[in-house]
Amino acid sequence: MHNKPLICIDGGILLYKKREFITGAAYHVTSRTNDKIRIFENKLGRKIMLMTLQNAKDKFRFRLVNFCLMPTHIHLLIIPDNRSSLSVIMHWIKVNSAKRWNRIHGSTDHLWGNRYFARAIKDAQEYNFIMTYIDQNPVTAGLSPTPEEWKASGAYYKARNIQGLVDYSPFERQNYIKLLSPVPPIVSKIIPPVQLEHILQYFDAYSDEIDQLYKLVPTIPKLGESSFLKTPSICLHYHTGTADYFIYEYDNIDTMYGLVRFIVYPAESKYKKFSLSELKSNQHMKLDLSWSVTSTVVA
Image 1: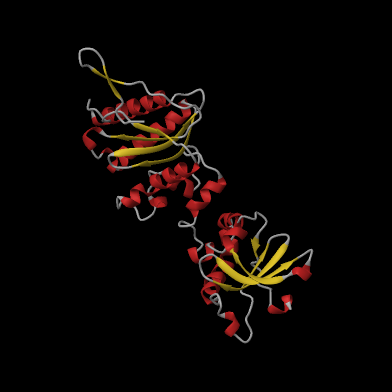
Image 2: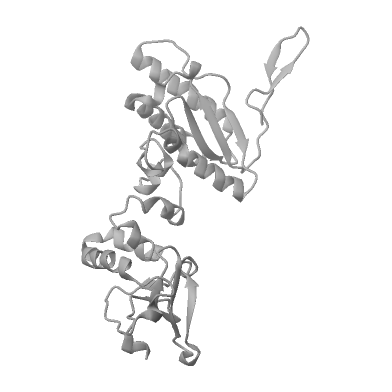
């Protein structure tokens, strides 16, 4: 969908072609300020836009799954309801944000430039790409070290679980909470998502265990190193409901090595490498924080 869909009629007059939208589709919408004036560079400009977006959500039926306010333009990832029109929504947002800006500044200037750009997302791959592209805008522009620290963004709202403006699920939020977590990244990588969410909610109750893990993880033997130790010790213990994983080695990224002991069929227990990310997909998986496990348990 072109940013300026123009048609020529008799007499050489150029008119905008009427947009055609797909019902139920997600749209990446961008719109620039008039003459690329840096309206959203200051807090007042961003506040006006955030208030207008919230008012638009209250008035119309649509999901805002991500957004980012940049100094000269905005990015929205928006899914209109079957009973709402993207054209009506965007017209309302642009008109009302301009009215607020001009009323505060006592002006009659044009706030927005040409027509907004809107592109329908065709598949999950493009959806994820656009989501990341919007998140990384302030980082790429040098405005913020991470997406989660740029206050005028969906990433900021998701990371801090600020509800109302941005639509997201607990699963979608997982990617945004790690950098802002009081749990160090080296530790959060080894804790299952569901358990990490619980620890963050009741962090004071787990602070001692987190400190212990922070000291322990760097000392875990690297893959292939424990065979050189006379008495390798169990460093971590995971329980999934059907099996226990006793960890001896870890590559500090994703791969672990240890004994997998099946609860129902203990005779099939064996040493193996496995991907931590694969284990994390198991909603019943938990990291044992009691630290009562010793090497004698698996003898």
